Image (cartoon, rainbow, N blue to C red; front, side, top):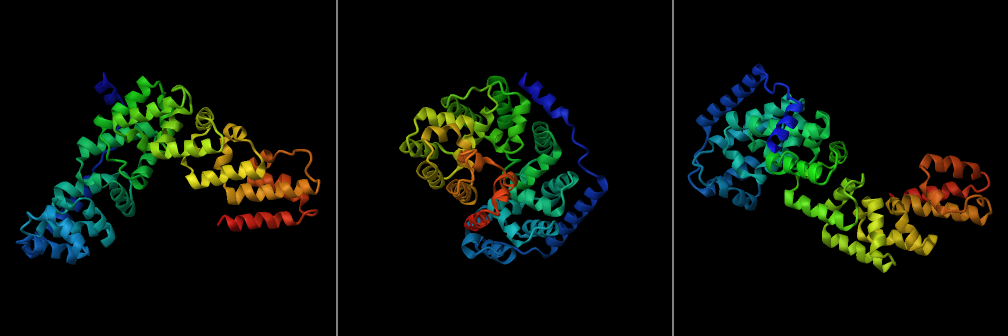
Length: 388
């Protein structure tokens, strides 16, 4: 059943032909030429010390780095393949720093055959529409691409992600920007996790897709890690059928158990009960991403300056996501000044002030009173400067 489901997912969005014969022939002709050239001029590397010198001279590694990265290359007795790989990567837009980064991740890349191991991967990425600089970015973020088979691994991954995210554009965006995006196995991670969330947790695919478009790493976890994450969300009392459930999983993914407990203790010190903490997380789990220091400063300001109760903050966790220096403090000063001058008696609640968009705040609060209280603009400008 699982295999049939996976097959239907992969078949949903068939990949356009990956290789244009003429361009691939040109690419392979180049690599073959490089191989022949380096076969003639490649130097002999009879001992590990020579390979250390090679990595220093040809890649720009420091002697200590070269000594470390040369160990997997100790079996080489010629620099023919390393020369070929380095020449090929330079021809594809990799500068010295990018080459060092790739080699440091896996020195054995220098042992690859350009024609059979590397050229097909670059052609695969080029046929997806990526530019030369895009390809460099994609490989630096996902170096596993260089060691995966195009048809057995890269194509299934592309189609699986395209099905999950809903468009190839989003796949390519994450491929260029998200680290190890193409590393996870379809059979061992992606498909089991999808099946677990959909079939056991009862989360519709469209809801899964909504979260994965922004944070695809959630479904790339080891299946046991994902189950542990779901168990943590269950402990907070969030129903799996809730639209917020996936967002809680996403927030918990970014917060270790230790950091989570530290925030529970912090909020307990301000008077929150565990049930209030869980309630706040269920309403807006994003506040878990705030650092302990900033969370402490925000809660302290809302309680000791604004005068909110801890229960009110727990009921309105969105307040904790607002910038303290750029938004909360300047607007509180504006609110205080207008109240002091008796100009804002119709709505006394600061929560109204602080939640307005910048445009609405200017229209409803600043502009109507700027003649009577010209200092308002100075207060807001000072807040902008402090926040920089």
